[in-house]
Amino acid sequence: MAKTFAVTLKKSLISCTQSQRETVRCIGLRKIGHTVSVNDTPAMRGQIMKVQHLVEVKAGK
Image (cartoon, rainbow, N blue to C red):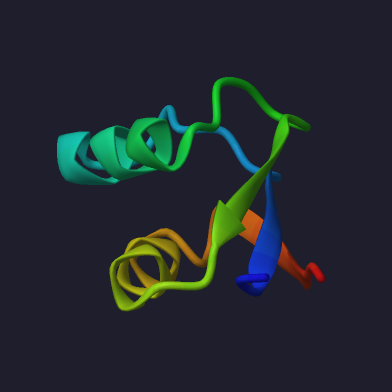
């Protein structure tokens, strides 16, 4: 089984750039407090690093 991360949106997107907003949407997050499970791939790690100041990441299985 692939390793996963639980990603939660913790801060508002109001003062963010359009690129950061699109990245959050691509991760699958919709509103503050929303949590999604994503696979541990280099692409997802890059997206998470781009918006690391907005999200909280916890290790999954």
